[in-house]
Amino acid sequence: MGLEGVASGVMIKEVLLKLDVETLCSLACVSRSLRFFVYQALSLFSTLNLSTFSPDAQTVAHILGRTRTNGGGLLKSLTINCLRLDDSCVPLFLSPHLHELNLLSCSLLSYHLLSSIRETCPNLRVLTLELVEQDSPKIFKCNLVRMLKGCLNLESFCLKIRGTGDASTLQSIEFFLPKTLKILKLQPLLEQDGIHVINQLQVDRTFSETADFGIISPLGPCIPLQCLSLGLDIISDDLIILITNSLPLLIELDLEDRPHQEPLLHNDLTNKGLQSLGSCHHLTSLSLIRSRRNHQVSFKRINDMGMFLLSEGCKGLESVRLCGFSKVSDAGFASILHSCQRLKKFEVRTALLLSDLAFHDLTGVPCSLVEVRLLSCSLLTCETVKKLACSSSLEVLDLYGCRSIADSCLRSISCLHRLTSLNLSGADVTDHGISILGQGSSPITHLCLRGCKRVTDEGLSLLLYSGTIGKSLSALDLGYMPGISDKAILTIAKVGIGITELSIRCCFYVTDSSMEVLAMKRRFQDGSKPLRRLDIYKCSGLSVNSIKSLKRPLFPGLHWLGIGHTRLTGKGNAILTEIFEERPWLTLCLDGCEMGCHDGWQFHIPEYRWS
Image (cartoon, rainbow, N blue to C red; front, side, top):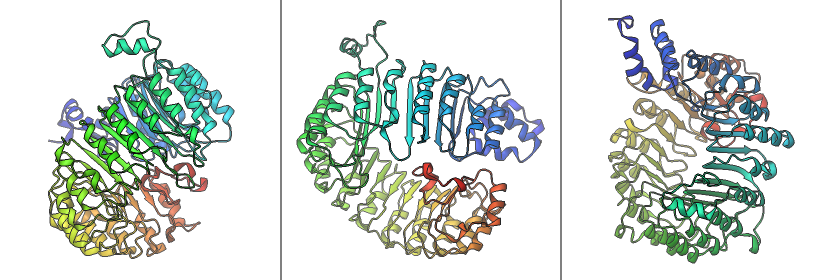
């Protein structure tokens, strides 16, 4: 029986509505019958996510046009990667029916987008905007005020301005924030402006006390803020204490700063500030990050005592992220692990004094850890990993930059039956250790071996051929590995049937033959998925002829390709122009961004914005 004999309701409800947009668009190209069913399915979508690739205007118009065949009233939530969209595209994705709108990587959109949102989307409840800094702060503030005055029902507002880092852009925003906000995320922001925002959003203590007993007074001044995230120039005691006094019902607090210079004693975060967090009795998620801009900075006025006070006052924490605590030792970090019995996510970055001793007694406490990230902690060894492996619930293990991690702990990792993401970047592992990992039962989907210089083609072959990991992997990072050559890439093409994201940046022994086998990856084995993202940045072994592998029908479904500092980037290349015309969904990055351009889209050179 052909598709014409299949009831449309059954086909749409049981099959098509369960697929993503990209798969639906591929199906629409198969036959007229399928195209009809796909169009019907798109018109029934209530949520649409177009963030996994960078659509052009024509693609957005085509897809969203189908969602509005029923008047557009069914589509309530929309997420778009706007890297290739300019102001002329704004009417395509704005609608009065939207309750949630997330516009990411808006590198070409001007600040007039804000006033357009006010005029077209009065019913928004959730709004996320990633904009690029422009030379018109007055126009920005004017349009931002107009938008906030028109979106009176906002419950979640996230605004990030990417660029040179002028934190004065969001000055005076506090006067126009809707009283309905439960979630607020702003970046960048000056500390003084952050203080003004908190003062405007503060909750009456009487309201807080009645809310603790489940009594919400209709006379309350506003709906209390539950989630606050700020990107600041400095995190200080004054700011933290004001937050705890003004927002006692806070559930999530995320603060990150990038000081231009070492903070002064009277304007920095100390143990006193950490202690004040204990008055936020509902706090379950805490993130305090100090990252460097041009030089190394840290919270030098916080020591183990500050961590003791924090762990005693906030025992209900389920997620903790800490970076820049250079004076905190094992005792301080261990107090968090032992006091917070519900802890599921634990992340520590650049902790110079963190060693295996912090995890020595981990087996003696209830361990419900699901996600552990220990980044650039140079004193950690395999003993820590073995202790963490006692947590059978562990799903994410990130050991980026922990250079003392070696083969001896990989057997423990391979026994983690729920582990889906593993980062061993920079670890001192060898082919033998990688083979042990491959023999395990961990259902790893994301694996990073970046900078593992002792792993070679043979190790990768042992990894993928030994067990089930060849089938479970979807993302693999082999960047900066001198032992990787065409032989390893051929293994990936043959065995890595589920791999859709591959990074081989700075692998100098990869040549044109690797591009050829990756381009035909699906032909090696039935069910093999095509690559969606490929990073070949600084692969100097590739010749200009390898660009021919990018022509259709090779590399079907490729969304993102990083070719910076390769011979493929020659200007005036007629083949490149042809590729852009026949692949409207392809984002080509020549700027050296990491996978997907999440870290540098705002700096892309205009003449290369085919992407």
